[in-house]
Amino acid sequence: MVDRQPGDGGFEDVPRSSPPKPACELLTIQQLYELPTPRAVVAGLMRVGEFVVVYGVPACLKSFVVLDLILKIAAGLQWWGRKTIQGAVLYLAGEGAGGLKKRIKAWAIKYKVDPCALDVRVLPRAIALMQPEEFKPLVAAIAALDVKPTVIVVDTLARYMIGGDENSAQDMGLFIARCNELHAATGATIVVIHHKKKNQPTERGSSALRGAADVMIEVKREGYRVELVGDKSKDDAPLPSIHLEANQVWVDIDEDGASITSLALEEIDPPLTQEPQAAQQEPTKDEAKPDAGVAIRRALAVIFAGAEASGPQLLDASGLPKSTFYDALRNEIEGDRIAATQPKNRRTCYRLTPKAPEFVSPSPSPSPNASPDSDSDVDPSRVRQSESETPVGGSDRTTDSDSTNVRSKPHQRKKKRAKRRGPRAGGAA
Image 1 (cartoon, rainbow, N blue to C red):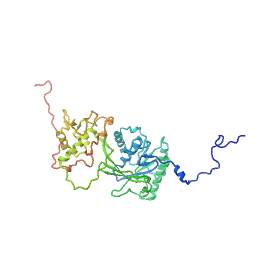
Image 2: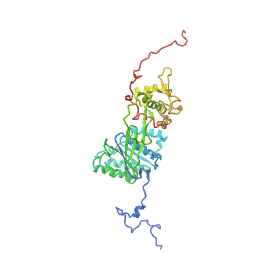
Image 3: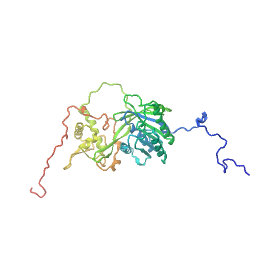
Image 4: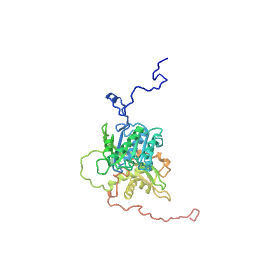
């Protein structure tokens, strides 16, 4: 009879004399060195399995920043020059999914990506993560996915902390424990979007959140310019500041024919640090005209894709006050940068001329009044042409207070015109 040993076949390959591993495994330095190093999900920003907090005051575009981040991870694109690991993402949209549609569409137009081909899942409502009866179905739904998410976004902490007090260290600890359970079930990096009170140096609520976070990023906004500030990085140097600009992108038209736009982010150079200067005088009307003209030409070139637009359409797309708009439009026509056409029995329309300096001669393409299928023809790279131009709708745009001796407002009142009927064909000469 042959003496057989476990592992030779015929016996279960289970060590019978080895004691089970203790619940608290104590590692030697050598064993510690042998542990795998977590990979970077985004180089220089966050690693696999980390707990990340992105915070800022309300309406600082922090959700736009995080959405841009996870879509680039899903698409395998670099995030502002930093390499990413391509993977599935899960977005817990506690503030609702209504606005996500046009935000994702604007991002897809900018980067020429089919968003439906990305492995992105969205929970379109808030649930109480701290309540087991609502948390367990979420874990079960994630477990049923074919591919586990690389990143899970919780937007926002307040929306998913229903029934808890964010100022309570105990409640905040339970919320953090739920995020750890999501990580344990998937191995994903958890990104939590949180609020900050105005005129306060840190985020809202208990300091337990900051203590648990591996990475913290503050989002600051001034007009259409956004700055990302690395506030904390437990194992690496904090993220160097990243300067972005939010540009308008036309994404659709509604049932009333009005343009639907959203924002897409673009990296810009940091502002120059200058010595304090004496306060400058308000710009005169003539000085304000060129910036307003740039906004009108940009609207024609980008939002209307080079096609003609009526005065009311162009006024709405440019984001300018009415008096400033019509003064600037008249100045552009006099400078032969915009041409006015008045087809028979139609209102006056406007188009770019070859003399428009910021833009190449636009090739014919569908206007916003065409079907939404023409969205892919919009070239978002034309939105921002030079540093000297003012962003459309930005904080630096010309306002009524920038002008003096304002002229009377054209088209303020619609005048009814009597139709003139001439002799019909075949009538007396």
